[in-house]
Image 1 (cartoon, rainbow, N blue to C red):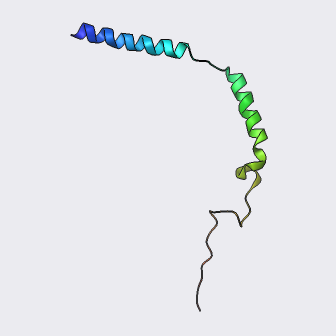
Image 2 (image 1 turned 120 degrees about the vertical axis):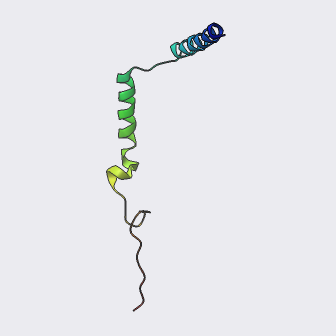
Image 3 (image 1 turned 135 degrees about the vertical axis):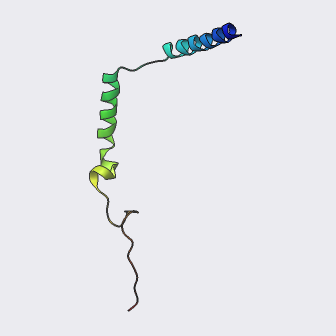
Length: 68
């Protein structure tokens, strides 16, 4: 039993390796350039870079109403 289960496991490993070998890959330098271009293109809409107005900020402290 142990021999047949080992063969089945190895077939699964080979199948997975063939699947991974057939995948399209992008060079790291190209992926980094694409990421940099994306960040530069979307920088104007990024609130972490441009800041957020206090009226549109959902995380601003809420005003407290108090009766005197």
